[in-house]
Length: 384
Ligand SMILES: NC(=O)c1ccc[n+]([C@@H]2O[C@H](COP(=O)([O-])OP(=O)(O)OC[C@H]3O[C@@H](n4cnc5c(N)ncnc54)[C@H](O)[C@@H]3O)[C@@H](O)[C@H]2O)c1
Image (cartoon, rainbow, N blue to C red):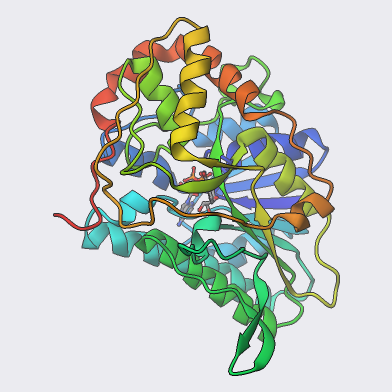
């Protein structure tokens, strides 16, 4: 199958490209290096060395093209040249803190995330074949209540003034990044309603962690990026880097925030399952919640401590004032039945994956320490 990956240079995009090539698909990847530039701009770098984008394509037997998907003519051109039979859209600025740095970073995030989404939607409207798309949203799009209202996959029954109807579950983001993902999801849902030949799987993904997949083998050219600074580093990746640098792990505030997590290798597994099993013809738009296990962020720090000690590190934890505006204590009950129905089975437990990560990353300790000043999560939601 000819598969187009938008955002192929990213943390998820490169290992996904490798998996799809290994499965025998013809892969075209597109990226404009935005992630690399954004991470540099906030004082970070990939803790694992990575090779240039176009070389990555050659390395794995895919065609990688450097181009900006914000330009409205780009995606139609790629469709014309490659005639993809499936598309994965990962091309977003994916950081909540980045979107909260300043007005300009907020605008950059929202404009980019909506333009890349809309440009694909309009290309598909005019394309005369059905091309299933897997697109990435986030679990952070859903409303998280102090009461712990269960979170369905997209829709739920609501009773109001005695009338019950199936309606979209409320979406309420925790940052301008999350708001951009909600807007993108809403545009996709609307487009699928008015252009029913569209066939979208919108994946609300939990927080991804890890460094390795089996396809990378021991080949340095196949390594994906590893971000650990306070803006693009996600919580487990940052904790592990903090443990390696000898910095305290830093849960926010009370530290009882709960989130769904998934290891990188299992995120790739889940994306391939969704790609290979598109929704049926009568279902233009479906939503899948993609997470494996739910953890509280303080409990996660405890898990990292245990595993880090096993390799001779002396990790510590120090809760810091919460830079975000969010609930710090709340129940969390999201569904993920659709993912399980597709045949998803986690391959590694959290402890197993932490062990893999720590043993892997310790070899890059000097490189990780080079940018340790950027690890502190300093972007405040409220203060300049
Ligand atoms: N990593 C996570 O924990 C996580 C969790 C939930 C959801 N997601 C979602 O998964 C998707 C991929 O995440 P990731 O962690 O791999 O992010 P990433 O930033 O590593 O990958 C996105 C890639 O898209 C590229 N890109 C962005 N805008 C572009 C444009 N205009 N033109 C061309 N390329 C462009 C970037 O350069 C980057 O390489 C995103 O949609 C993100 O919101 C990620």
